[in-house]
Image: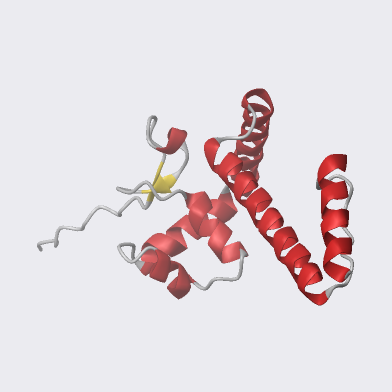
Amino acid sequence: MSTAPTAQPRQYVTSTPGVCGGKPCISGTRIRVWDIAVRAQAGMSPDEVLADFPHLTLSDVYAALAYFYDNRQAIEQQAADDDRFVEQLRQRTGPGPLEEDRRAQAREDAKALLAAKLLEGFKSGTPVAFNKGCFSAKKRALIRRASKARRA
């Protein structure tokens, strides 16, 4: 009687030092179990997760979810530790270039909005209210004079 050779079961999730900080990933990828679990917890179906990671199989997604639920406490603790580390790093180093760019863009947007409101006020002849912190006292006085002159 001969027996057919059986294939070794595939290991879907591995933790390799030096790959994603040693966090559990889908074998042969850098996609962490956490990445799959977050999407599932956000309400995505396994098929929707596959749309984000088309090179994975449905078996990969289900294996990652099974691994997550079997090791949920440890994985969530790792994520919380990572979040604390990032916050400590931010406090030590200050905002990064992207955050600085976003803040600068927000300031520019606020200035443009204020300029548009001032222009609208000048055109309509109605006084424009503004926050004292927006301009120096000298600039506020110039704006008031220009506004009064425009109405006269």
